[in-house]
View 1 (cartoon, rainbow, N blue to C red):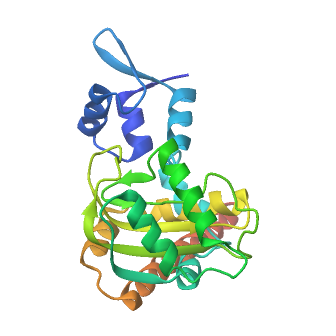
View 2: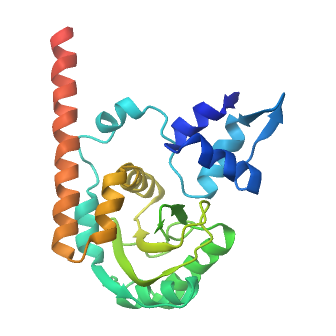
Length: 238
């Protein structure tokens, strides 16, 4: 299945000009036919998985899909901790800092986790754009946490994660999940928040852990209310 530039821009929730720039730089798979960029759906989906990107397949139904809340981003953040002025001179040293700070369960070996995170970055950057990275192991750990876990780190200085948009990272969300299904659900929910430009702006000025948790809880509550209203309207029409 072939997709147009406009369709891909909607799937990624990005301006067409940004997609065109990525194509010219070779950052996204595309072919040129008759002077127009064309994208093969299966190639785009593979690229998205590799770069930790959730495609916005049905934007008008996103809120309904994410509710009722099965996995809570705010609860995962509370478990993982929120840290400011995270130190590091490059990707690996930043990852080492966040692993050292994270309140990991005793069964998780920090050296092994760091090694797995570095391996994932070597495969493809977890920088998803807009100055955000979501580092995580490529596959669940042998001794994974019982519940989803997000350690949030606001960097002391921006670091080049080789993200697809070239913007250096100022905040990262290290994700650990008990299994692949939980990882995908948590990633989908977090990605939904990060597609909101106002949330990105909030992150850039955030200076307190309590403020971030409150913001995320408010967003999750709106999703829950939106889903309930959708269901009530749907039931009323039948």
